[in-house]
Length: 178
Image (cartoon, rainbow, N blue to C red; front, side):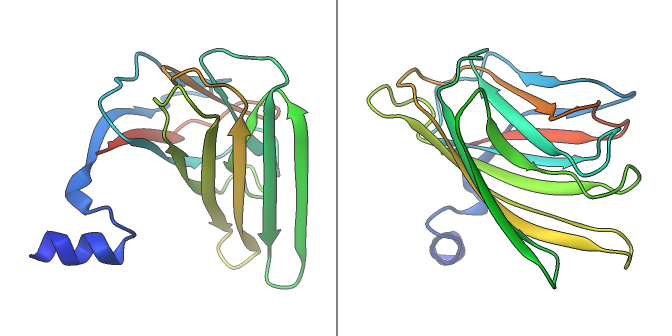
């Protein structure tokens, strides 16, 4: 009964519906991370990331199946308590997977849902929630979404910062959602 109630409250997904596939925590700075050999046994995927980059105020890019063609779209909306901004990228070579804070010492967080990743009859979409707090010296919240205009099943995911490297201790976790 409790799982049924919590499943209804969280949009139809119970906490027990998440299975860890892989977690990566960087021991040193790195230009990208990849999740490979993703099993096709789930309905959706979720990436939870805690990351910072070597260059301030950068966003995180995501590509599927090593596809670097310009068949991705992204949209974002962010705010810092006084200013809101929005934007879009069409015919890009990546989708947005979150933003790093305007600092090289604070980490940003993102939760990225990749919907229907194994379906071969539709394009793949992702939705993201992201944010950062810089210990009272600023911060932001945001949401973004993306579309990979391909009907291929997703079998690998690569994350890179828009420039620079992911800092040491950045952490990335991939979950399958039943």
